[in-house]
Image 1 (cartoon, rainbow, N blue to C red):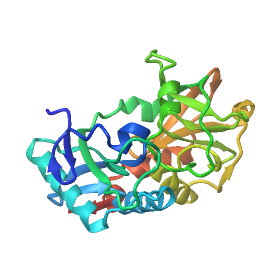
Image 2: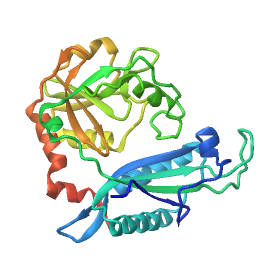
Image 3: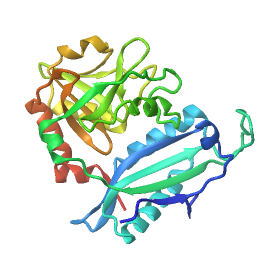
Image 4: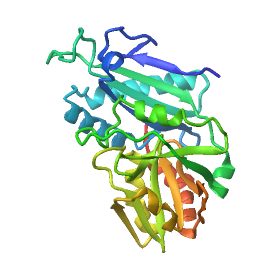
Length: 293
């Protein structure tokens, strides 16, 4: 199995200009999502494709990066998925990177600069099924998450806070690290969003000054009303993590994974969380999430 397939501006390539602003300044955005070949339908699909496109479009608007047309991005997506299928992949991860484009030295950019559009597919590395059944262990990171009200919630290319945080441990015991901001508020994980629950009420950190508003986070907030009494976005202080009954983490690849321990605190896995996990693993519900080609 190949490691990855890459396409840049619609052409098969794995190289960009050394003066691309994405490389020079992290001046760009990205989206990561799941895709697979749906055997019953004999077609390929990307999960929550339109949600990812809409977030990417909004992020481009905030950062003033020219947003390529949805038609162009969809054509690129179809092209690389067909190539991936021909190379033997049947499921995997699709990543889109859009940089502001190739520019000269200095932070100032030309208004008519053409974005660089990168599509990547990777084989899907399925995580241990036991994690969904018994939960995973987490730890707090020493590195704090960067705060920026303009960029909070966006998946921009400046991810050094997550890189530094993830470098803090090599032990396989820990699946993920929890990050806090300078005010000791729990924000998210190095690669995930975070949810707590108590008395069947669901809580997730408020994303205002830092953190990512993940697509799976958005979907869980929407769908959790089927299983929990309420769902609220609130400020969660680091010292308050022990007061909750349970905890789980989310992203577009792993979906919903329960947490059994954060530091020495042990969490339960409630029936409501089990139902939420099952909801995203149910094939009939799962197919509804896919944009098909």
